[in-house]
Image (tube, rainbow, N blue to C red; front, side):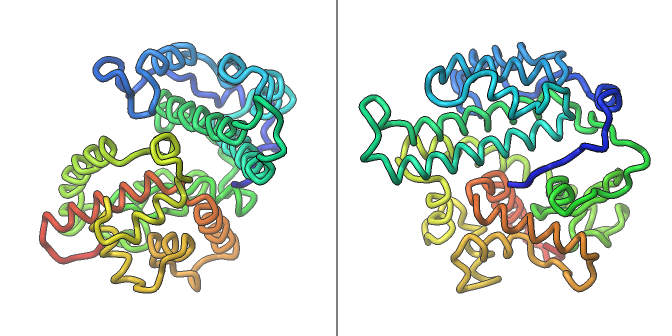
Amino acid sequence: MFEYSCDSFTFSQIMENLSIPQKCNLPINGSKKSILGMSTEEETSIRDALMGKNSIFAVKIIAKEFERRFKGKGRTEQSIVRALAPGGKAVSWTRLDQNICELCQSFSRTAILLEKNRFFLGEDWENMPEVQHQQIDFFDKVRLILRSLLPKNGIKLPHEAKEYPTAEDKARAFDTCFLCWRSVSRTRQEKKTPLCYVHRDLMSTSKEYRRRKRMRHRMLEILAELNATIPTPSEVREQNQLHPRDFYLRELAKSDSNFPALVKYLHELDPLGKSSDDIIRALEHPIPYHKLTDLENAAWDFHLADFSAYFELNYNRILLAEAWLRAEEAYKHGGKR
């Protein structure tokens, strides 16, 4: 994970640029289990509590809910507030998301340490490695709820900040290509439709662009089917007693995988590529490193290293790649991938 800094923002600037959550795209009625793995009652309760709040109030609500769920099992409400809103000051929604990621990384390190020393844990503490993962799952769900509440362009940036100050910051702001699953490096104020190095030269009026835009509708249908059938990282832990990283890596190496189109694509691109680093690089291929600035190259290095080390973070990208590849197969046309 990356350390993110917005120290150049004053408190008043941050408060001016905060966007208040207004609406939610998550299901309210229907099945008892939502796409987040929570009951709809839990999800709705948290969503409603966060509605209309700025980031500092959101942090306090999240920390209080954490304390309610995990009291006596590690961090306190106050320590969560300090981690998510250092100094008790409001942060941007982007910064809050990144602070949550960094907090989850600390839970992950603690889980590994406790697992190695499980034999020495006292009575009533032997399940603490699993508790760390439960805490990570909680924050994963909170992140999705926050994202569903915020308008896509709800976070404004200072006009004078044209580029991100560090490679970590730039990597954190990578977007996803509108016409495929690959990541897109963007400047801080970039507004145009994100297109990767494969599709960036396509004009919106071109035949191939229009074809892939039509294909996108079929892709989204397939993606919805995958989301309904492929277990999330939290579900993998609950159902398989297996680390999600190992589960998804194994799926991408099986002949009878849940991701047949992606397995075929990866094998054609790199028949020997089985490691997490091999797969991440294949998913992002091609990246024209020789044409990039030093900052862009460093940002890609951070991006690839992070998603390789924490392979389970690729859950959404794996599903997206599989959906696009199946859609391409259904169209049975040539053209750029």
